[in-house]
Length: 188
Length: 207
Image (cartoon, rainbow over all chains, first blue to last red; front, side, top):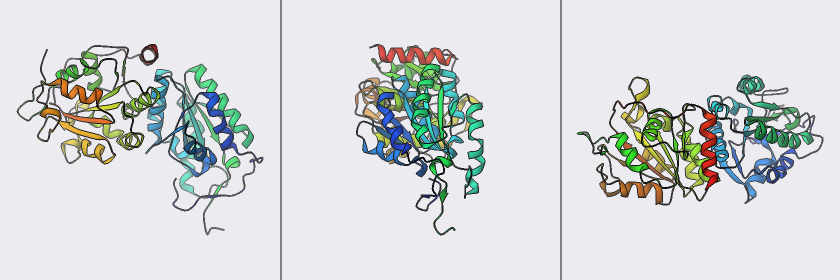
């Protein structure tokens, strides 16, 4: 997390009431995913809590997101698809490591909680947040951008299928319109 | 075969060291970091159970962790260089936390960027990778050099004890081997990443 304060989020415009984090978590068994690597982000909501609480899921905490790309390549070589969950700023950290799944045609799955979009209140989040879709596309990652909370889990399952079929990384970007923009304590 | 006896500064012969260890690998998977560690592993004998990096510096330890977690009954050895390990140094924290009993790491430490012109590396100064690994909860030790305190005071010939530690001791285990800064002949694995991943994955799943 980038900010020391306790995370709070303004109401999300496109939440449609669905708990997308729980819905994504519920897709994991059918997708054969037992390993989830992460640098945590408040925007990942209930997804990380549920993974941590489930003894069937191994949650691998990272120091930097690029470790998660290499880890997911390793689990795939060992026979299993893995997911890497990160904040959008983490996409800036994975750039060189994405060469590994690209050149080796290894599927891996990224779940990205976005910052730096509409209503962002921390300008430091904007440069990389704005670059994320272009960065991923330039590095050969197929990008899925669900438009509502209830669309996140289906997009995640679709991204997993596409990653497996194509032998390439795929990413689901969960927008701030779905998550809600982060607010800062004491700010109006 | 060359032995790995240390030179006057206590530094081991990298090719003989890697060959002596990999001769005793059994069915272990080997993940080789980019550059000379990959050439050393290839020179010791190519195998579909070897995965070689040609790039993605800093990724070897975590790829090894991924294999170890997905294949808990398979021993996994990561062989990499000091600078590659340091680029992914946070991996040691992740590995220490996961504590896979089937993962070992061999860090070939020549205290230099051997591939790029022998610029001095950070382990030539104060950085001690084994100490960092111990700080992450990994069972770590050094062989060779002035500080070597490895199993049986490894002197470059008794590979059984060292290989036994790397392939049989409950992990995670990390060995820093202080090696000479030497010029070795090229011994290059295939560069085709798809070939490397497909044969490695098939070999892991196949038995």
